[in-house]
Length: 133
Image (cartoon, rainbow, N blue to C red; front, side, top):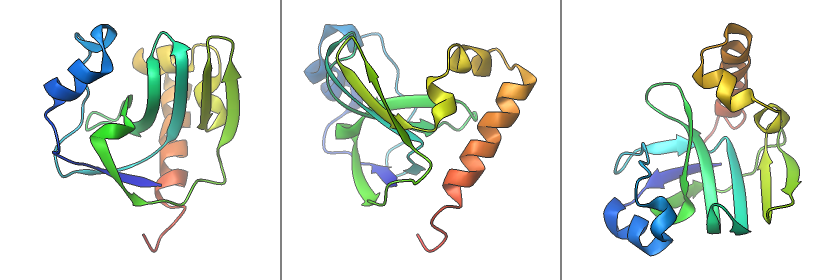
């Protein structure tokens, strides 16, 4: 799955529409840039509010997320490497199983070598899953 950042509204306008819990949030996305979607989650009453979100790799090779409303879908094929995860807080996620493992994201941001290597491998698999896209 791929998405492209669109400019129907500014990031500030979109953050305002998402509610106060997002006012200090930065979304590392660039207008017109296409991203391979690494995972998705839907929230209904969790700390993320209500909405659909995509996970992607940033320019700094980090895992990040942003509301799906920031994007247009340019390739709607879903990865066969994704699994579903549900949360008591009212969220459902699809993505590589490693992403939902305890402390995976924290270890990635702390540059734990084996986690960074695993993330790079996952990104490579997902980027090359649909070579004709």
